[in-house]
Length: 248
Image (cartoon, rainbow, N blue to C red):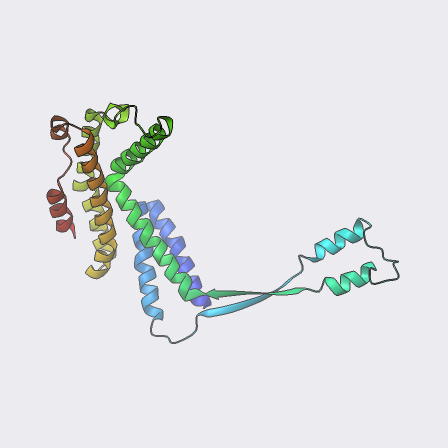
């Protein structure tokens, strides 16, 4: 139990150093790689990694001592309310038990590292789209509340949603798809030799990227003219699918 916990903490500390000297993605992939190795190494051992810790809790004694010092309880009371009697009968230490399962904690740490990597790569790739979707949602909610369910201005008329702004956004995302995302995939290959492991990590990233594009495409169809859409070079579902498949 203690050995597994110590190794997991060492991996966490080392991943922070790797992130500091390299990039956050390097730190996360380092953590994923070595946590997977640690999990694989302890798998053959048919032992219970759950430990129950017991400790004495004296915290409730503070209340009794406060009552004594404030005069609520007297040392000279000739009854069960005597301060000493109260302290003896009501202030016995409590036994607190806490259960620690180092194997489960390892799984949680691995899950957190994987989810952090997935979200980091997603944001690295489509952060402009996610930010735009958030702004659109906020505008629609505010407009609906102010106008009793009727928007005063269309999304296209908002300053942040002007066609030229969307064209810039699409260019940034296309560049990220062609540069940052392939770089992240190469890092995955560097740290994770198992194609199956890489596929598990990359699948939700592909899903997130595709979903962000789909939401923007739907908005373009609903709010913008054909001329506007032609100037916004967002990748089509087929183009995006081919690109993501090539990186898998």
